[in-house]
Amino acid sequence: MPKRSIALGLAALLAACTPVQRHVELSGPALERLYAETSNEIARKGGLRTDRIPADAPISLSMLVRNFEEISFFAENDGGAARTPSSVIPLTRWEGPIRIGVIFGESVPPDQRARDLAEVRALADKFRRLTGRDVSYRPDGDVNFIVLVLERNEQLTLASQIEQGGGLPRQMVDDLRNSPPSLLCSASLFGPDPANGGIAVAVALIKAEHRGILRRSCFHEEMTQALGLLNDSEMVRPSIFNDNEEFALLTLHDEILLRMLYDKRLTSGMSADEARPQLYDIARDAARAAGARLVKSPPG
Image (cartoon, rainbow, N blue to C red; front, side, top):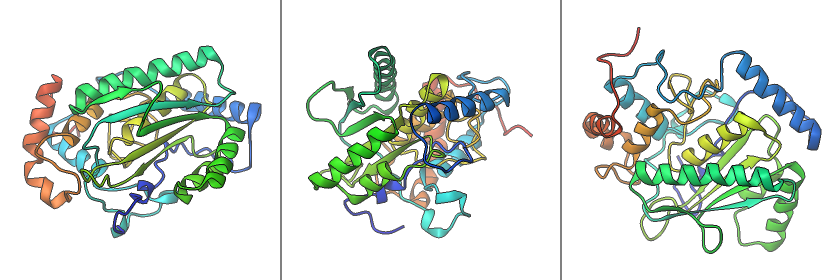
């Protein structure tokens, strides 16, 4: 992976990645319909589940260790390309306070804003408990974790404003301007923070055309990935960090991974080889703290 400078490469755009197969320019009601159809189709196939502790997906200590490495030490490849050595990344997380702010586009009505803010605040509370970090929602003032809730035309307008104002990475403009319908939502990371070596700024984009459970799923996945669980993998289950969209909301398994990421025995910038000798103990402690019941070996 290239040296992390003032951008963790935007830690690659972190897609929620349900494979919507239409790449034409859509906006407004047409995009709303497309996402509604997508949500309905995923649900028909048994996806977008909301059970936190699914009975059909037991977890073991070895699974937690394997899944933590898969999600924390690799970054997603664009277009689903085969993994290459460049996709290996060091451990990435926040080391200082996390101040979350939300920017809504004018297209988002007051009742929907209230529901979205409730989701954000609930996630902030959960993140504070799971990570031990100082995490808070800030309705105004300085923030370093920005959640954008914008429809397509609002994304384009903001991209132009950022471009004209200068001072922000060009990649942020490109991410807003070139986000295809197939990218349901995304998160971008900037860093390292010169004060502590961790993430400095995060930006999550929630597309305002989403409704219902798929909209909630975007908040859960992108805001959690912006804490440093950067990858999606088909082998990781039960989890939101899997492109098949089986689970819509954070599972107990995901909460344990987040506890592991913020364990005091790990540090930002650590490699998988450096972390690996401690991961079984870390996973065991995180599972115990979560009250999880583990099986002795992976199913099957």
